[in-house]
Length: 436
Image 1 (cartoon, helix red, strand yellow):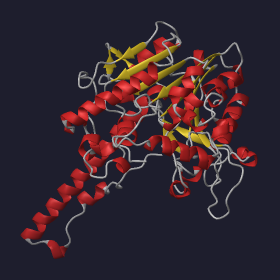
Image 2 (cartoon, helix red, strand yellow):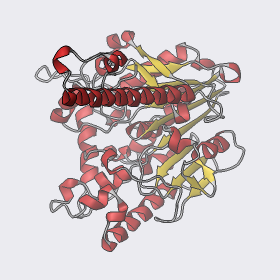
Image 3 (cartoon, one colour):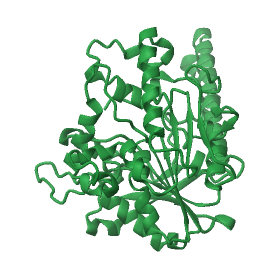
Image 4 (tube, one colour):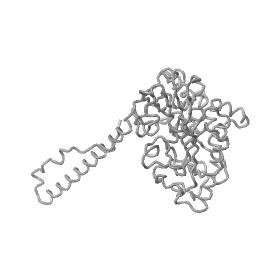
């Protein structure tokens, strides 16, 4: 479904003659002016519609939604109790036995109040989700823009639990009616896809963006275990490597936040046991990828900005740690940062790279770490493989991921420090994600 803000004016409105009550010269001129305005508006709307249709055609069009009604009986439901959902574009030709399962992002809710605010949105209820979803970037069906994965079975798993698909609290408080069942949703959808042919997969990828990118790390080894030993299984995390770091006030804002998420949703038992068994004093810290990847067995690729806009805004300089709003402009655009703030941000990049590379540099792990101020880059054609996509060492994200998956060459690309990369897209301050 395509949503257009304004309905087009009727083209016949331009041709309607003036009535006898409007034959004066001034009225006639006003009528002509109004007609020209209506005509211009109609042409503008028509141009917009054509552009949208061209884009949809270029990216392969929209994919319908599938509601997993039988999951409700298993308690695998969204925050409001509605069934989980996904969009499925079937593979073809040489890709018919290849599967790419991509998990949607959308932050987390760490309190009943925050989860209640999500319950009436598409991040908490499948009843609020659009029926058609356009696939782009990594999920595109077009060979030119997505040469390595365009004809795979491509699935976008919708995110409606607020816990990166980790929650598993049995009890439902009747006073709020919230269900914390993210892990059950993940299991139910994977079971459904296995039954629909994924159990015979030749190749399989578990991927995700942001909160979904974190989920692709947390569930990666489990995904591998559910598929045949003969299946080539790898994972891709796009903007999901959230680091355990202090904020600008010296506080542990993100540690406290993830701890609240884990407690509310009952997530700890769903986090990787290879991590929680080592972090027994604080198992909730296994929400941080740097502790999980140390014992991961499955090959994984990290797509991340070293200056991830979400992390700088919510881990380094959250509003709670910036009462005087000294970081407000800097968080919107790094060009607006003071020299002192840029020094702190460069130190944050160093922390990020240390956390990312701390688990070793096995060739089974790939990475594309650019110096852009961005968050999630694989799901949009403009950053995945277009003429204006960011590049590191003359390599764009799509090629880097494809080369790594098919083992055409090892890929561990880390960009030079900001502001060295001219291929980074211009920052759109208005599109920055909100604070947690």
